[in-house]
Length: 113
Length: 114
Image (cartoon, rainbow over all chains, first blue to last red; front, side):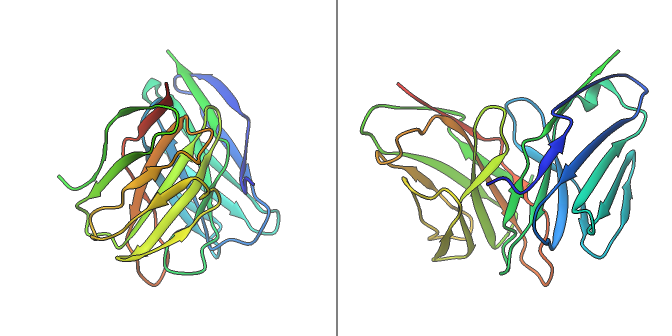
């Protein structure tokens, strides 16, 4: 079963606007990660936030984590057409040394000029 | 350049046929993974390996098999027992340290049934 669920499923904005995507999950996690996927390609890691962190920044990305609500959000500021892609949250539920990530269904972001 | 190479990019399977997807990495990562992605859905874990000569089933291992004879290689075989093999298959790897880390992905193999 899917651990993470993203909201919204699809988002269309204009270049320069901010995009916010949300992720909810069900069980306790070690960390939560966000990935980006361009159509027909592999996933690219964007940012990782650990369960003891509340907020993290990387360039135009801002991620928050609320473990009490079992939710996370990804904010992309000043969006560009090149940000058009699908974005997935993934929760790490591994108990060994491998990262056993469970992915959500993704948010499809369309940034128009 | 370091990275993960998946081949082929497109693969077609006939009824009753086994097919093998290749995954090679030169990142010196200990852990490797196989995920399946269906249209409009997230990724589901098929198998993973934390070290050479060891691998574990993921959430949807039925109809698939893997081997890990070398650190760099983690091939996935889609057997005839997998009745719905059409999907996009992604291989990934990660370092192994005290805290679990991010995954690096290959560019994927699209498998279709003839």
